[in-house]
Image 1 (cartoon, protein in one colour):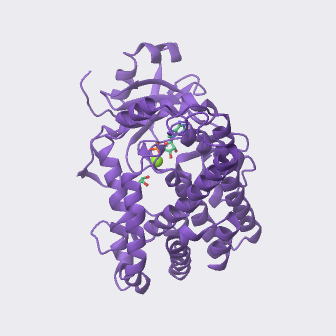
Image 2 (image 1 turned 180 degrees about the vertical axis):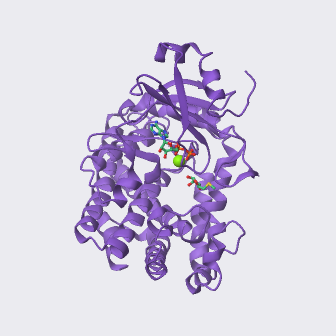
Length: 408
Ligand code: ADP
Ligand code: SR1
Ligand code: MG
């Protein structure tokens, strides 16, 4: 079928023509409602009218940016990469990725498992829900998806095939280059400009040449280092969760990029939540729990990454018998430490881009009291700057926690 933009009525007509969907519902009595709350796409909850427990999610990309409108064109081919990434990540670790029932690159559409007992993690964290299994789950997800799509695991040919499959995701990579690494640190029409004018901290940031030069280095790494298949937008709004399970959704920014970028995105979003609870709720116990989650996630990530590496033989990088085991262990430990360093640098960019750039996070931009919001922004800027200026010097997770804690 030729591409057309669907609505809550035409999506039903479309779905009823598809064998996999008819088999799933075993009835034609289905209805749809649009539930999308993201920046880019339309998301329908499609259910059996008589038994809404039987439901699925249908997501379609439109040829523009949803949160701005048709005047901001963005090619719908981003869904091609979301479909491929869901498929790839599911094949690595199915526990953490919604099951795909049907997909169509032509229609830029995917039909997938409805996560009915899960909520968007950002909402849970704002409401101070502690997810005790989260660090275990997300460290496994990140270590496995990154390790098994890298040259540390794949053969040289398979790695290059993977890059060919994902690295034409040019528009979304460009969006990240612009929004995460450039526009948010200069005068730009896409910024939250009502908040920038006559704002001393914004003007200070835009004039901070040392900070901006370091950001340039991280942007260059983002553009050129093809380590592994990334989710590409791993913030807490891309995680659906409950006390037992963790799912990662929305991988439309997927491409083969630097290891530290996904880890850094997650770190940044946990820090944004920490800032919220430092300034708004002032809940010290929850802040302590968040710091514990940050430390635990990063340390478990490193351990699991090394465990996967220990099990792996004959790959693009390492030929059996090439190095003695002691030298190899030192090499591997340094390698993982460098991922941690880079993730701190990327986290700094990601915290800072949410302050004045387009698409803020609820934890900070959602603060109504202007005095508190300014305090939160200032705290975010202090952490972001420390992260960006010093990431290459980070040796362990305690140093990361120290930067976060001392920014209050
Ligand atoms: P966008 O690409 O526009 O950011 P998302 O993939 O983030 O869209 O989806 C938007 C919202 O739709 C999510 O925040 C979540 O509330 C809901 N959603 C998406 N996928 C699922 C799913 N598999 N199960 C339940 N809800 C979902
Ligand atoms: C205008 S799109 C803004 C942001 O939304 C996505 O979730 C990405 O983070 C992107 O940068
Ligand atoms: Mg989203």
